[in-house]
Image 1 (cartoon, rainbow over the protein chains, first blue to last red):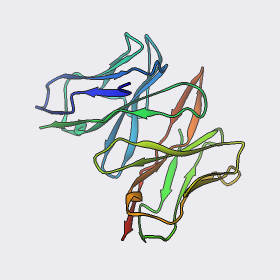
Image 2: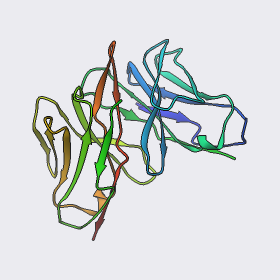
Image 3: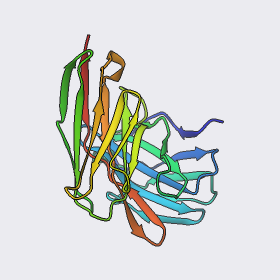
Image 4: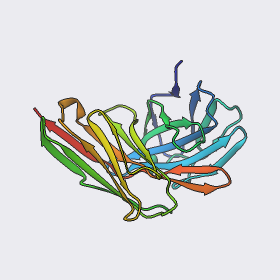
Length: 113
Length: 115
């Protein structure tokens, strides 16, 4: 099993460009999440999904959109990238019950110039 | 929303000594309390967790204690080793309603174990 994978690993964008980050999991998890990690800030939840076809906003959703068309995939989109979106992005997945571990992907390092 | 604070933000210990990291949270509805470890350049990984109906849990050299009344829980690492050097995050979980749950991560504690 590959677990949680993310594509791409690194990306450099210019201000105003758009891109999509792909997260895939092969553990049949219902829940999927997108976090961003900035120095000294911990991990902050951007959006999450409790099942195929459903998404919800997290703590810092502005400037991002998401889609969950298939249970195993969770896409994070930046329509018009800004330098403030320079960060490391982590995807995670889990079963919904209390006490179930969130499994993280390897991360995507995004730089917006 | 949940307000989570971790202390200290950095911690240096001699190899073999113990380390303690404390996490305070604000939402009394939080019912699950995990600790994640993130090594440099790697993804966060769960190392230990505790549910709200338990006061302490131990797994070899690591343990977590919970005080629900005071709304804090702590990570204890004994006999520290260089491979324990990492950033540690607490992430209390709160029920958002309608079957949705969310982890709120602290800002992290950088632990350095000096050989």
